[in-house]
Length: 125
Image (cartoon, rainbow, N blue to C red; front, side, top):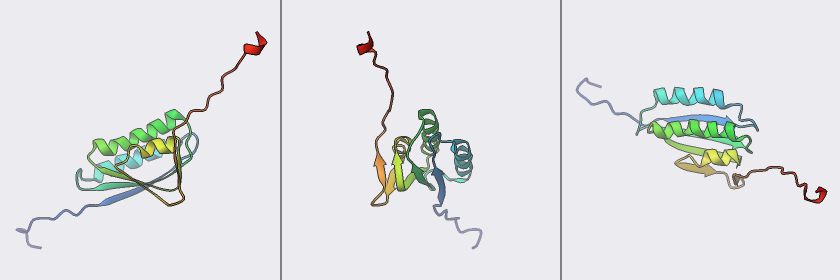
């Protein structure tokens, strides 16, 4: 190309994964991946694509993971999350951040629930 022709910027798709466990122990590595993508991506042009597999876990872990996904939105990068198997509880919370969620036909998506034990001493009083 000659130097007088304008450079055309083609959109790029940055793909990463989040194979979550109960503690969302992958958050530190995921944060580093998100930072690397944000440093390279062009806001309003490029997109991020996250393949997610998680049956959920701790609120602090998955809240932090969802916070990492919010960084894409704050950086002007469109976010798509793909779920092949499961995104429940904290995984579902991560999906709620996305611009678009793509799920396989038999994927299990859904609810953010809380399980809590509460002692009942009524009969002992």
